[in-house]
Length: 372
Image (cartoon, rainbow, N blue to C red):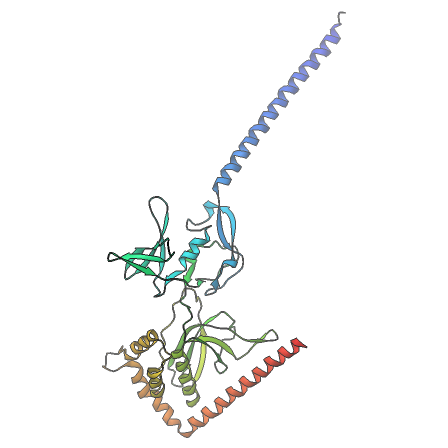
């Protein structure tokens, strides 16, 4: 049946519209497909740019010991991280290695990309090998196999860092806190403390004399502040000291008590992770020096350092600096105090003992309160 012109025109218009719609729909689908492909390509490229790296999961301050539980892995854009950032905890653990003599272990990568350990000793780098039978480490030196005992030393933050800071070995430093046989935790309550001192800070303990002379007694000691019922002590600190350092402190405390206007006080390190320990400069009394030289509990390494310190002649006058200073000034000041010096010592010692007893009682009372 023949259709009239109006029907043919309507049908042609419909077909044309459908064709246009199909063309437009196809173009839209093609455009969306291209965008999807482009998006997938970009996502693939972004994934290729992503790497895992260790970051801090908490804030740390300079000098604070970094432990594995403070680290976590995160996926980050490798263009935004330093090339020495790592996702391998072994890199950090290897960095903490030293031998028993304090020689460092470093990692070197060979041409094949293998990471090998080297011991830095006597100005040379010796590759470390592991004996399969015993799993002991050794180096080859002078055509001989020399066994090496490795220890992991604590790693501390060089600077204060915030949570999510990317971890690299350049942000860490090693501290030699291997506990020696003569180390003891000492309690002191006569030291003038900085107002903002907190547990984990590092301090020097110094003596200030009325003349303005200022000497270091012991250096770079990590502080622990005891607390009772959650409240930090106002005047008491705990620090770990070696036997020779204990004697240095005892001498300085007694001298401070004897000299009117003298003060024994603590100063904080501003960036403990980066700053080296200062060299003690306080001259000991003759009695303490004699005790040092005869004390069997002092390690030979410490004694060698003390001998070097007390034999130094920085002024070039032919006399050892510290003994000369002791004889020419400090002993004279103490002698000028007369009997009052001994009286001051008795009074101050009694005050310290009483303070310690009171703190001990408060501590025990707090424990009894918890038990009840």
